[in-house]
Amino acid sequence: MSTTTERPLTEPTFEALAKRVDDAVTALGGLDPAAREVAEELRSAIEEIHRAGLVTMVRRMRSDGAARDVLFELVDDPTVHLLLSLHGIVRPDPVTHANQVLATVRPQLHSHGGDVTLVRVEDATAFVRLEGACNGCSMSSVTLRNLVEEALVQEVPSISSVEVLPNEPTPTLIPIEALRIGLDPASEGWVEVGPATELAVDDLSPLSLTTATGERAEVIVVNAGQRLSAYRNECAHEALPLDNAVLDLSNNTLTCPWHGFCYDATSGECLSAPGAQLEQLPLRVDDGVVWVRVDG
Image 1 (cartoon, one colour):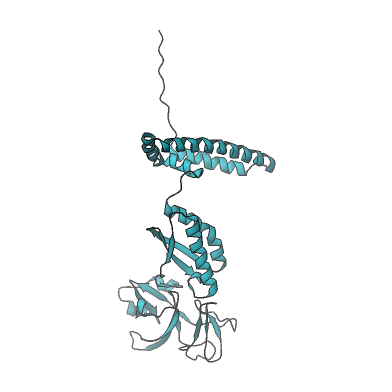
Image 2: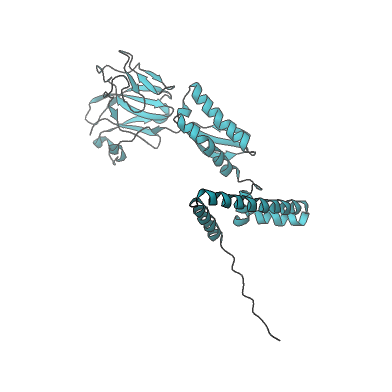
């Protein structure tokens, strides 16, 4: 009587399976159009067969009390979860699903100079931060905010509402010299402005700062939706003060009240006279405190 020794089957790892899929997709893209069309049809047909079989298995396991527990355990396995997700049988977690939906609307936001960040999903509410043009007050900004809300509520079943969080104060632009601030910032020309929360949002704040040498520096800080920019308080035209300049967030402009010279609010570039420029000052926010470098 002869005996045989069975070799244990070695199951491929999740990483190995994922790599095979990636390699196959890459190879598929290198085929000529006719061959690629046949390969795509074959893949689609096989996927449909797999999906039909998986749906039948899941339905029967869910209808059986004992099998239902096994099904829930299987769904926790990364390979099984990936397989069921690929066929749309199980939905991804709310955060993953919400980020997938936001990725579909992000090109529209980018086309209007905006963006969105998902902060968290809690109690069926998605908390997001809107950036750029989305955070302004114009009708186009409202439209973009509605676009985000409608996409999340309609496409993610576990989300029923969206709440827009205020943006954290951040410098619009950090010049190279703003990246260094020593133990004694005053010795490097930095002047403490004060808490960022005290700077009026969607407005400009004229400030008279005193340097370490006792000199006065007239500055304006523009807070455009918590995006901060600092400039010398002098119009590039005749150096007149900009205390009463008009800040229009619908087109992100700052207009001098004296002769109507118009500037980009977040870069200082003059839109009325090419080549002119407001003198932008390095600005940074440390632990909620705003600093501006006026000399050094």
